[in-house]
Image 1 (spheres, rainbow, N blue to C red):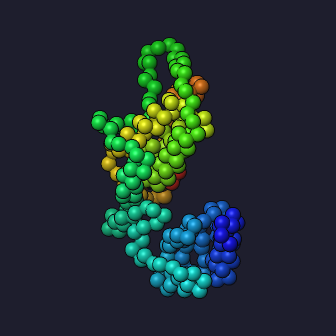
Image 2 (cartoon, rainbow, N blue to C red):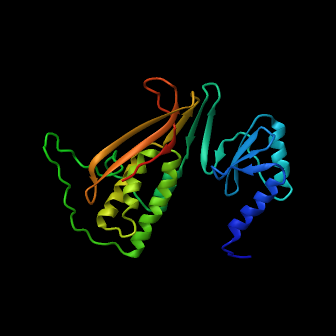
Image 3 (cartoon, rainbow, N blue to C red):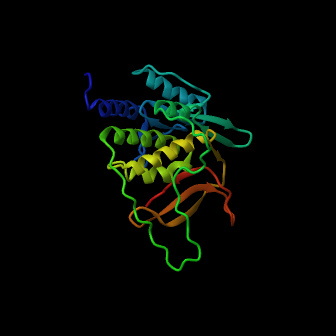
Length: 262
């Protein structure tokens, strides 16, 4: 039925029933991760995109045959593309490089943002620390005019577009996006200036490449915090969770979780 709001969940339930009949089940702890009761195969499912890991070609053929009973599907045995992300596999060095070629260029064109005349290396305005001061007070907020509905929707569209890219391959934008997102329900001209700076940053940097490498699977965490670097006397903390080696100084790796927060 055209524009049926329940179409997505109905399609999901139908697919789930079909897979359950053949021994596949979805993880209760991690929605979107599927395994088989006996076969050495697992996959993640996002909308209609399957990312499959298997040991033995016969297991993935089994999954393909099951899906073809009810659906028209296409196959990519190279595993080069998944949910818009390009995977460059380096099996010799046990690494994989993630990127989204052309994503930022298309986004800047879509939002009509011209490259800055001067290179921008900061995604978000920073508060200059006053070293040596016995007390450091929060800077008073300068009055700024509220934006109309059209500009508010423009900011929301930008944050949504860049958030996907940032979560996928470029975490350097997360703090800026987190700060802007807290203002996007009632943005001001100052918010728009922050958005322009973020877009200038995007236009100034090379395309991001995120690398994951095989490790001893020991969880390591880097965390840090800033003082009075957000409005309303708020501070900010963040963490970088990654799998590494069990040594005193674990070498960095692609994150399995990031948490910038106020």
